Amino acid sequence: MTEAVSQPDQPQTVEGGDMTGDRDLFSKFDPLIKMRSDLLSTGVTDPFGLVMERVISPTVAMCNGRETILLGTYNYMGMTFDPDVIAAGKQALDDFGAGTTGSRVLNGTYAGHKAVEEALCDFYGMKHAMVFSTGYQANLGIISTIAGKGDYIVLDIDSHASIWDGCKMGDAEVVPFKHNDIEAMEKRLKRIPEGAGKLVVLEGVYSMLGDIAPLKEMIAVAKKYGAMVLVDEAHSMGFIGPNGRGVAEEQGCLDDVDFVIGTFSKSVGTVGGFCVSNHPKFEIMRLVCRPYVFTASLPPSVVATATTSIRKLMTASEKRAHLWDSSRTLHKGLTDAGFQLGTTEPQSAIISVIMPDLERGAMMWEALLREGLYVNLARPPATPANMTLLRCSLCAEHSAEQVQQIIGMFTRAGEAVGILG
Image 1: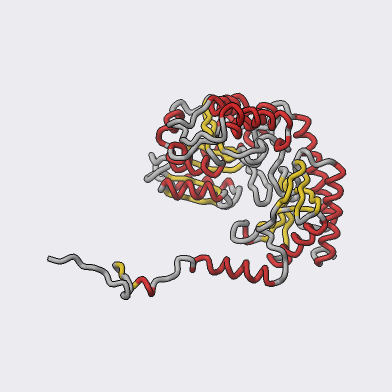
Image 2: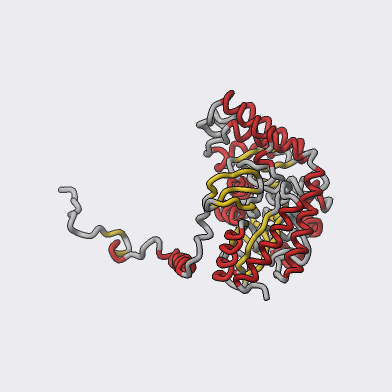
């Protein structure tokens, strides 16, 4: 009996057909490739390829050789250049080196990792905290681990990609409902078989439009049907609530939340993600949550900066008040100028300006960059209702003068590209 040897000049086959006739694996991206190509063919600068040559402060950077106001960084509390935060990171780099080279369940837990989890417990007033290498991993890991095959996840249709990916990875039945619609959420919960595991996933602030969820009412409904509740407070931590704990604290329902997800890459000013909880069995997650078990832990310098930042955010009431003032001023200024915004009133540090279409949105983005202002261009299919948005995220370090400058820049750019008038 002889072994079959494939001939190099013959096409290889797989079960189901000839590989040479198979669809290109990149074909699914063709519509997006065309959208990007069509956009760049108009001559606009690539809005997704901006390079910051130097970052001067939380609110200013050098972009394309000119000083530019930053209004699209999610650096809500401006902690990236805080002297104490930077000093803590430098000291940890000297004391512990550049990285851990291991996961948290092996050699990747240093004193700093325990310290940042203790800071999170103190910040939220909860018993347990787990830190992940990114906020995306926090949602991916927690959701996929606690809700699996046979369980049901009821979630807002506008949920973040990391939430949807966590649902997919866990293999639970996914039941979406219309954005911020309490009645629609209850209808979905009613249909779930009795005795099934149920998880309701909500966000405090939705990052595209900057609107908040009616958490108090939604959590009450979830508990009525015996569901556990996870709230992603990535875009509200540090800023919203008397102590900066987020929308759940602001609405007086934090004690009813089973899991709070957050990130260090927004108000904390560094990188990483976390989950805090009071569930008595929560610590077992360290052994069963795959994105936690099989990922290298954050570098010591990163957790040191996060710990220092979190503890400073506990006493940042003046910064929170200033950020609210800036949000109200910018929202009113842009509304008065004639722009259509994503919310009728300021609800967070995110203010989204709705554009007529992607082409004019990109033109407006480029015009603002020429004015010396950087914002985010958010495009379909990532946006609600296929809208094109210019997404602004204010920082507590933006001065009142800068906010007025921003309003003037938007007005001039809007008139130049025909969005206004």
